[in-house]
Length: 141
Length: 326
Image 1: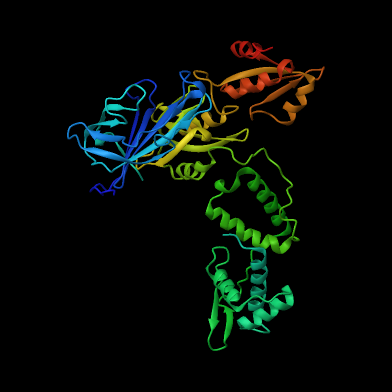
Image 2 (image 1 turned 90 degrees about the horizontal axis):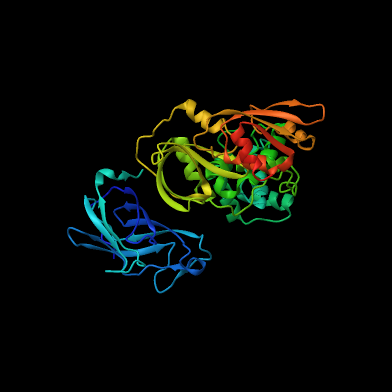
């Protein structure tokens, strides 16, 4: 059940931020809405794996407010499969744009972590200490 | 939704009966009888009632049809109204037919927004009246457009953002650099080159004018942000002083001279590659051409594609680049 916050605006953050490992997808944008928080990612395959390998997201993925420790669960994924299902690539020159949807977050300044696996390996898609200052966000039309 | 052929035939009958001053106020039963006569089948009264409702409510016709209780029949409140009253000459209709053919070829459904579809439908209604059935779908113009090309799903939102000068955020993927980037762009125009579409706009990230292939744009979002009006002169130069779409970085507008063999000279004469193109033909049939443009990746590609039949004379750096494959 998605609980509605008091936020009424839709605020977009352009982040273009790498994860904790260089093979992680780039975290492109975060969109705050009263219904959900949407995070867009871009992944490019590398020579590390045969035919570019595969990607998937753990269903327990969450966003955490570093200060309050409050967690926001993932509610939907678009463009990527939820583990154990895998999105297989065909070559090491492929790419994939995908989005994860989380429970709505408060539109307040803060620092967040986006965690796929707690204390994860470099293969897990974890992002730490992302500062979000409302003044940097852009309101949607 | 489009009007089916059979529905349109019934609309025409209803229209004619409502216009008939000798037998005004036709009833549904009268219309049913005439349909049986003219169309060799009898639509139900429900169908005819629905037809009248559609003619009244449709954006195509907006027919002012009213039921008269006193005379127990239907009539037009505007006696001059007719579904065939769009004043088009035969030449107009021929031109529209060509344009329709072009539109169909250029874009598929996504590119034509609903309002435009309605306008076209209105024209088609008259067009069907004037042309024999079966001739409508005959293709006489063919372009390079291939159904299934990527990026057209965003065409309408990008078109609207250019038209209304609304800044947008989108994710761009560079094929050559293999990187994703979330960008904020103040869109200026959509440009087609060699059957591919591009968005030209001021990019906040790049702090300058940039070109983005529609096939590499993901999820454009309209933003509530002040539109940056870039210098008009610079926009015109960026969009027009070029062959193609991607200018080579740090290159200014310059005169480029190239020599074409007699075999390909005719093509360059028949289809100039830029409005600034000028030619000076030699006795042998070869020709020196000059164009005044900002060099682009597409220009180099074009020059190289002619192999030994085209030689760049000036500037020397471009001569070197185009000679490397010969």
